[in-house]
View 1 (cartoon, rainbow, N blue to C red):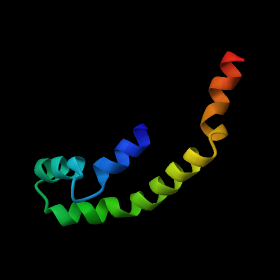
View 2: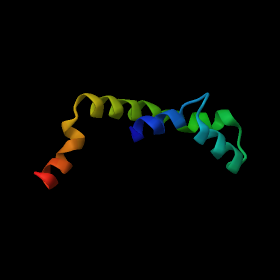
View 3: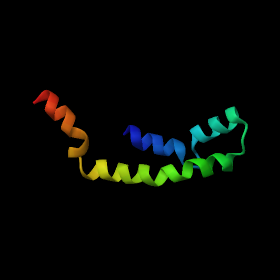
View 4: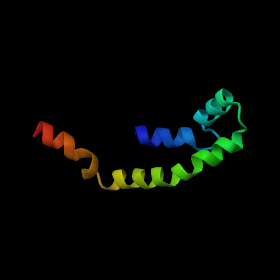
Amino acid sequence: MILNLMIGLLTPPLGMNLYVVCRIAQIPFWESVKGAAPFIVPLMLVLILITYVPDIVLWLPRMIFF
């Protein structure tokens, strides 16, 4: 769920994190979008992977609690 929210905060036009970075760094919005764009595809692939193969993220809790 957190990964999904992070992707939502990084993608325009509603990417609130991008607007914050633009305001702090005093750079144009599209410059920050170009900087974040290469990370969106791998994040989406990881989200798909952990959604459809839950054993990837559940192996540690299973080792600790079972």
